Image (cartoon, rainbow, N blue to C red):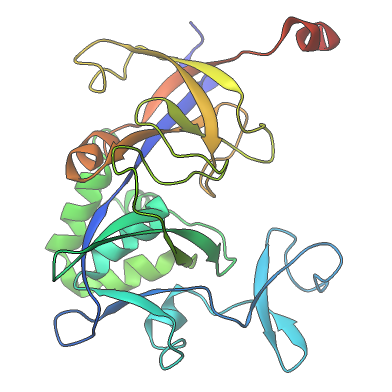
Length: 283
Protein backbone atom coordinates (compact mmCIF):
# COMPACT_ATOMS: atom_id res chain seq x y z
CA UNK A 1 0.00 0.00 0.00
CA UNK A 2 1.25 3.46 -0.86
CA UNK A 3 1.82 6.02 1.90
CA UNK A 4 -1.18 8.30 2.48
CA UNK A 5 0.45 11.29 0.80
CA UNK A 6 0.82 9.25 -2.43
CA UNK A 7 -2.68 7.79 -2.44
CA UNK A 8 -6.04 9.08 -3.58
CA UNK A 9 -8.66 10.59 -1.32
CA UNK A 10 -12.42 10.11 -0.95
CA UNK A 11 -15.16 12.15 0.63
CA UNK A 12 -18.92 11.59 0.29
CA UNK A 13 -22.06 13.47 -0.64
CA UNK A 14 -25.78 12.94 -0.26
CA UNK A 15 -29.17 14.40 -1.17
CA UNK A 16 -30.45 16.44 1.81
CA UNK A 17 -34.12 16.82 2.63
CA UNK A 18 -34.85 20.46 3.41
CA UNK A 19 -37.95 21.90 5.08
CA UNK A 20 -39.25 24.82 3.01
CA UNK A 21 -42.23 27.11 2.48
CA UNK A 22 -43.69 28.36 -0.79
CA UNK A 23 -44.03 31.85 0.71
CA UNK A 24 -41.69 34.12 2.63
CA UNK A 25 -42.27 35.34 6.19
CA UNK A 26 -40.22 36.03 9.32
CA UNK A 27 -39.43 32.31 9.74
CA UNK A 28 -39.09 31.14 6.13
CA UNK A 29 -36.81 33.82 4.73
CA UNK A 30 -33.85 32.26 2.90
CA UNK A 31 -34.58 31.85 -0.84
CA UNK A 32 -33.60 29.01 -3.15
CA UNK A 33 -33.06 30.58 -6.55
CA UNK A 34 -33.58 29.53 -10.13
CA UNK A 35 -30.89 30.56 -12.59
CA UNK A 36 -31.12 34.31 -13.31
CA UNK A 37 -31.39 35.52 -16.91
CA UNK A 38 -28.35 37.80 -16.64
CA UNK A 39 -26.07 34.83 -15.91
CA UNK A 40 -24.40 33.68 -19.13
CA UNK A 41 -22.20 30.71 -20.01
CA UNK A 42 -18.57 31.60 -20.69
CA UNK A 43 -16.24 29.90 -23.12
CA UNK A 44 -13.04 30.77 -24.96
CA UNK A 45 -15.01 32.69 -27.57
CA UNK A 46 -16.75 35.18 -25.29
CA UNK A 47 -14.58 35.30 -22.14
CA UNK A 48 -13.02 38.77 -21.64
CA UNK A 49 -9.30 38.80 -20.94
CA UNK A 50 -9.81 40.21 -17.44
CA UNK A 51 -11.86 37.19 -16.30
CA UNK A 52 -10.02 34.15 -14.95
CA UNK A 53 -10.25 31.16 -17.37
CA UNK A 54 -11.68 29.14 -14.46
CA UNK A 55 -14.98 31.00 -14.73
CA UNK A 56 -17.65 29.16 -16.71
CA UNK A 57 -20.36 31.74 -15.90
CA UNK A 58 -20.50 35.52 -15.74
CA UNK A 59 -22.77 38.57 -15.61
CA UNK A 60 -23.89 40.19 -18.85
CA UNK A 61 -25.31 43.67 -18.30
CA UNK A 62 -25.65 46.53 -20.77
CA UNK A 63 -23.54 44.63 -23.26
CA UNK A 64 -20.66 44.21 -20.81
CA UNK A 65 -19.44 40.91 -19.34
CA UNK A 66 -18.06 40.82 -15.80
CA UNK A 67 -17.86 38.53 -12.76
CA UNK A 68 -21.25 37.69 -11.31
CA UNK A 69 -22.06 38.94 -7.79
CA UNK A 70 -20.90 36.45 -5.16
CA UNK A 71 -22.57 34.72 -2.19
CA UNK A 72 -22.40 37.80 0.03
CA UNK A 73 -23.97 40.11 -2.56
CA UNK A 74 -26.74 37.62 -3.33
CA UNK A 75 -27.44 36.99 0.37
CA UNK A 76 -27.70 40.75 0.81
CA UNK A 77 -30.44 41.01 -1.81
CA UNK A 78 -28.93 41.25 -5.28
CA UNK A 79 -31.62 38.96 -6.77
CA UNK A 80 -34.62 40.09 -4.76
CA UNK A 81 -37.77 41.10 -6.63
CA UNK A 82 -37.00 39.16 -9.79
CA UNK A 83 -39.34 36.22 -9.22
CA UNK A 84 -36.58 33.63 -9.18
CA UNK A 85 -37.49 31.98 -5.88
CA UNK A 86 -38.30 28.25 -5.92
CA UNK A 87 -38.99 28.14 -2.17
CA UNK A 88 -37.80 29.55 1.16
CA UNK A 89 -35.80 27.78 3.87
CA UNK A 90 -35.76 28.69 7.56
CA UNK A 91 -32.08 27.87 8.13
CA UNK A 92 -29.30 29.68 6.33
CA UNK A 93 -26.85 26.95 7.36
CA UNK A 94 -29.06 24.11 6.10
CA UNK A 95 -29.45 25.93 2.78
CA UNK A 96 -25.70 26.46 2.54
CA UNK A 97 -25.12 22.71 2.80
CA UNK A 98 -27.73 22.13 0.09
CA UNK A 99 -25.54 24.36 -2.08
CA UNK A 100 -22.53 22.23 -1.19
CA UNK A 101 -24.37 19.01 -2.11
CA UNK A 102 -25.87 20.48 -5.29
CA UNK A 103 -29.29 18.82 -4.98
CA UNK A 104 -32.07 18.31 -2.43
CA UNK A 105 -35.57 17.12 -1.72
CA UNK A 106 -37.79 20.00 -0.62
CA UNK A 107 -40.44 19.15 1.98
CA UNK A 108 -43.06 21.91 1.94
CA UNK A 109 -45.16 22.96 4.93
CA UNK A 110 -48.25 21.33 3.35
CA UNK A 111 -46.40 17.99 3.12
CA UNK A 112 -45.79 18.10 -0.62
CA UNK A 113 -42.41 17.16 -1.99
CA UNK A 114 -40.25 18.62 -4.75
CA UNK A 115 -36.76 17.90 -5.94
CA UNK A 116 -34.18 20.47 -7.00
CA UNK A 117 -30.89 19.91 -8.73
CA UNK A 118 -27.95 21.99 -9.90
CA UNK A 119 -28.62 24.39 -12.75
CA UNK A 120 -25.64 26.77 -12.74
CA UNK A 121 -23.32 28.66 -10.41
CA UNK A 122 -22.28 32.26 -10.04
CA UNK A 123 -18.86 31.21 -11.29
CA UNK A 124 -16.57 31.81 -8.34
CA UNK A 125 -14.27 29.11 -7.01
CA UNK A 126 -15.50 26.80 -4.27
CA UNK A 127 -13.71 27.77 -1.04
CA UNK A 128 -14.39 25.21 1.71
CA UNK A 129 -15.36 26.74 5.03
CA UNK A 130 -13.88 23.70 6.79
CA UNK A 131 -10.44 24.71 5.53
CA UNK A 132 -11.03 28.25 6.81
CA UNK A 133 -11.92 26.96 10.28
CA UNK A 134 -8.91 24.64 10.29
CA UNK A 135 -6.58 27.48 9.31
CA UNK A 136 -8.00 29.56 12.16
CA UNK A 137 -7.45 26.74 14.65
CA UNK A 138 -11.19 26.47 15.34
CA UNK A 139 -11.44 22.77 14.44
CA UNK A 140 -9.22 19.71 14.88
CA UNK A 141 -7.90 18.20 11.62
CA UNK A 142 -8.28 14.73 13.14
CA UNK A 143 -12.01 15.10 13.74
CA UNK A 144 -13.25 17.61 11.17
CA UNK A 145 -16.47 16.57 9.46
CA UNK A 146 -19.70 18.10 8.21
CA UNK A 147 -21.08 17.47 11.68
CA UNK A 148 -18.30 19.34 13.52
CA UNK A 149 -18.54 22.24 11.05
CA UNK A 150 -22.30 22.45 11.61
CA UNK A 151 -21.81 22.34 15.37
CA UNK A 152 -19.26 25.16 15.22
CA UNK A 153 -21.69 27.31 13.21
CA UNK A 154 -24.46 26.58 15.71
CA UNK A 155 -22.18 27.57 18.58
CA UNK A 156 -21.05 30.83 16.87
CA UNK A 157 -24.19 32.39 15.35
CA UNK A 158 -22.58 35.84 15.28
CA UNK A 159 -19.92 34.54 12.86
CA UNK A 160 -22.14 32.52 10.50
CA UNK A 161 -22.36 35.15 7.75
CA UNK A 162 -18.64 35.88 7.75
CA UNK A 163 -17.75 32.20 7.50
CA UNK A 164 -20.33 31.29 4.86
CA UNK A 165 -19.39 34.32 2.75
CA UNK A 166 -15.82 33.02 2.67
CA UNK A 167 -17.18 30.58 0.07
CA UNK A 168 -18.03 33.04 -2.72
CA UNK A 169 -19.45 30.26 -4.89
CA UNK A 170 -23.25 30.36 -5.19
CA UNK A 171 -25.44 27.65 -6.70
CA UNK A 172 -28.63 28.09 -8.71
CA UNK A 173 -31.15 25.27 -8.99
CA UNK A 174 -33.94 23.96 -11.16
CA UNK A 175 -36.88 21.77 -10.28
CA UNK A 176 -36.42 18.09 -11.11
CA UNK A 177 -38.73 15.10 -11.34
CA UNK A 178 -39.79 13.62 -7.99
CA UNK A 179 -40.44 10.09 -9.33
CA UNK A 180 -38.16 7.31 -8.17
CA UNK A 181 -37.47 8.44 -4.63
CA UNK A 182 -35.76 5.11 -4.03
CA UNK A 183 -33.05 6.43 -6.37
CA UNK A 184 -30.95 9.53 -5.96
CA UNK A 185 -31.11 12.72 -7.99
CA UNK A 186 -30.16 12.87 -11.65
CA UNK A 187 -26.38 13.03 -11.96
CA UNK A 188 -24.27 15.08 -14.33
CA UNK A 189 -24.17 11.92 -16.48
CA UNK A 190 -27.98 12.26 -16.90
CA UNK A 191 -28.84 9.10 -14.96
CA UNK A 192 -30.06 8.68 -11.34
CA UNK A 193 -27.41 8.29 -8.66
CA UNK A 194 -27.38 4.96 -6.78
CA UNK A 195 -26.31 5.00 -3.14
CA UNK A 196 -22.97 3.35 -2.56
CA UNK A 197 -22.29 2.75 -6.24
CA UNK A 198 -22.12 6.24 -7.77
CA UNK A 199 -18.93 8.28 -7.70
CA UNK A 200 -18.28 11.93 -8.46
CA UNK A 201 -14.95 12.53 -10.20
CA UNK A 202 -12.98 15.31 -11.84
CA UNK A 203 -14.84 15.83 -15.13
CA UNK A 204 -11.81 17.45 -16.74
CA UNK A 205 -9.84 14.20 -16.33
CA UNK A 206 -12.30 11.30 -16.33
CA UNK A 207 -15.15 10.19 -18.59
CA UNK A 208 -18.59 9.53 -17.14
CA UNK A 209 -19.55 5.87 -17.10
CA UNK A 210 -16.10 4.46 -16.40
CA UNK A 211 -15.92 1.88 -13.58
CA UNK A 212 -13.56 2.44 -10.65
CA UNK A 213 -12.59 0.00 -7.92
CA UNK A 214 -12.17 2.02 -4.72
CA UNK A 215 -10.33 0.59 -1.71
CA UNK A 216 -9.84 2.26 1.67
CA UNK A 217 -8.71 0.40 4.77
CA UNK A 218 -9.60 3.31 7.06
CA UNK A 219 -13.10 3.88 5.66
CA UNK A 220 -15.17 1.35 7.58
CA UNK A 221 -18.45 2.98 8.67
CA UNK A 222 -20.11 2.58 5.27
CA UNK A 223 -19.80 -1.22 5.37
CA UNK A 224 -20.57 -2.19 8.96
CA UNK A 225 -16.98 -1.96 10.14
CA UNK A 226 -15.38 -3.58 7.10
CA UNK A 227 -12.81 -1.72 4.97
CA UNK A 228 -14.40 -0.09 1.94
CA UNK A 229 -13.73 -2.07 -1.27
CA UNK A 230 -16.30 -1.54 -3.95
CA UNK A 231 -16.79 -1.24 -7.69
CA UNK A 232 -18.33 2.14 -8.53
CA UNK A 233 -19.34 4.10 -11.63
CA UNK A 234 -18.16 7.65 -12.36
CA UNK A 235 -21.48 9.45 -12.85
CA UNK A 236 -21.15 12.89 -11.32
CA UNK A 237 -18.73 15.74 -10.69
CA UNK A 238 -18.25 18.72 -8.39
CA UNK A 239 -16.10 21.83 -8.12
CA UNK A 240 -14.32 20.46 -5.03
CA UNK A 241 -13.44 17.17 -6.77
CA UNK A 242 -10.11 17.91 -8.41
CA UNK A 243 -7.41 15.45 -9.46
CA UNK A 244 -7.10 11.98 -11.02
CA UNK A 245 -7.47 10.08 -7.72
CA UNK A 246 -10.11 12.19 -6.01
CA UNK A 247 -13.63 10.85 -5.57
CA UNK A 248 -16.91 11.69 -3.87
CA UNK A 249 -19.09 8.73 -2.86
CA UNK A 250 -22.88 9.13 -3.04
CA UNK A 251 -24.40 7.74 0.17
CA UNK A 252 -28.11 8.28 -0.54
CA UNK A 253 -30.87 10.68 0.48
CA UNK A 254 -32.05 12.09 3.80
CA UNK A 255 -30.58 12.63 7.25
CA UNK A 256 -29.19 9.12 7.72
CA UNK A 257 -27.29 9.36 4.44
CA UNK A 258 -26.03 12.75 5.57
CA UNK A 259 -24.65 11.28 8.79
CA UNK A 260 -22.78 8.67 6.75
CA UNK A 261 -21.46 11.18 4.23
CA UNK A 262 -20.37 13.81 6.70
CA UNK A 263 -17.50 11.82 8.20
CA UNK A 264 -15.96 10.38 5.02
CA UNK A 265 -12.47 11.85 4.60
CA UNK A 266 -10.19 8.93 3.86
CA UNK A 267 -7.11 7.98 1.85
CA UNK A 268 -8.06 5.48 -0.85
CA UNK A 269 -6.64 3.54 -3.77
CA UNK A 270 -8.25 4.11 -7.17
CA UNK A 271 -8.20 1.50 -9.92
CA UNK A 272 -9.88 2.46 -13.17
CA UNK A 273 -11.11 -0.43 -15.31
CA UNK A 274 -10.80 0.00 -19.05
CA UNK A 275 -11.07 -2.45 -21.97
CA UNK A 276 -7.93 -4.48 -22.74
CA UNK A 277 -7.64 -2.95 -26.19
CA UNK A 278 -7.62 0.56 -24.74
CA UNK A 279 -5.19 -0.44 -21.99
CA UNK A 280 -2.73 -1.72 -24.56
CA UNK A 281 -2.59 1.72 -26.15
CA UNK A 282 -1.31 3.16 -22.87
CA UNK A 283 1.22 0.43 -22.12
